[in-house]
Image (tube, rainbow, N blue to C red; front, side, top):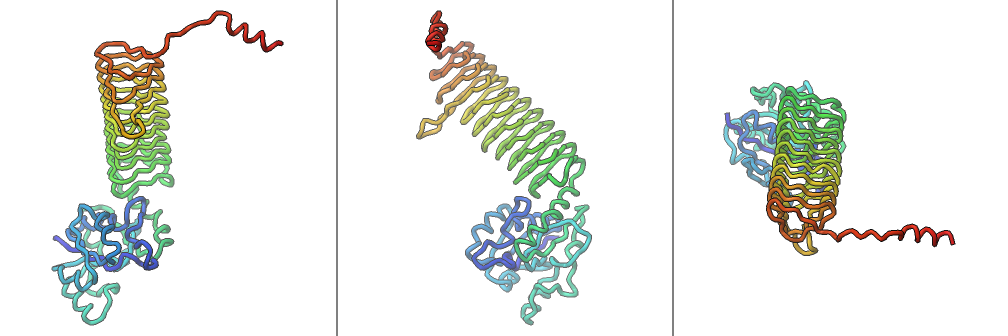
Length: 378
């Protein structure tokens, strides 16, 4: 059955000028977004939200993807509703628990309109209304919607909210639940292992067989199968399958890292495409670059992409070998199968299969060091 949901009060006990409780995060997700996500399981299709004009833009933002309409009063919201309506009278948080307090309930719209006309507030659940748990059919573990009156109550609900998400995961190994935090918008495939200190945020999807952690944060990312992310931060990017990230890697937004890659310690990648089989093992910065397959980055390689005014891109072909401490001065292209000598600063394009040497030739001054030491003894 298609149902409408009416949110009557987003603020709760907040001061009038403060952000409404339902727009604040719990486990990194706006509470309103999470509640709407939960209610879609029991047939909610349309969301009618009574909201102060000052917060309407933010409500639209957090409800992106839902059929949402905003109203100034409960009477206006119910005028657009029909059939059975789910009522959320005030701020609530989805948590794990056995009780059904009817803090969220379902009733016929005619009953609700009649109560309003009689001056009875909709915060009181009608006797003929049904608790929300009775509407759950497809989900084995429905939430309890716990009322939260203020910021302290919202914080206090966090452990039980986290318990709800952890209990729902099937085939996922969580080594230390007390130090694992998962956004309700995340999806985690069976066979994943989450080590202590793992934080998964936003619309993150983790493929089967992955190992995340310890001490890793992944935000708004898609991660392929059998990939490891160890003690690193990965943001708004795509990581392929059978890839290793970390320890101490920083992946900034808009990266696509391929399959069978290695992105190692003290490596930063930003706004770049990294081809399959490429190794960036340590102490390297790759920014605004298009990197081919099976490239080897020597330690200390830097793509110098910023001239103080604009960002420029580097293009690195397949099977390229970049020697240690190579500087690539963008815009520049290193074509397929090319090498750069260690310590080179490359400013011109390198042809296919070539070796680029861009450093001063070494000069040995015989006896210089011995003569220097003799001056120290005087």
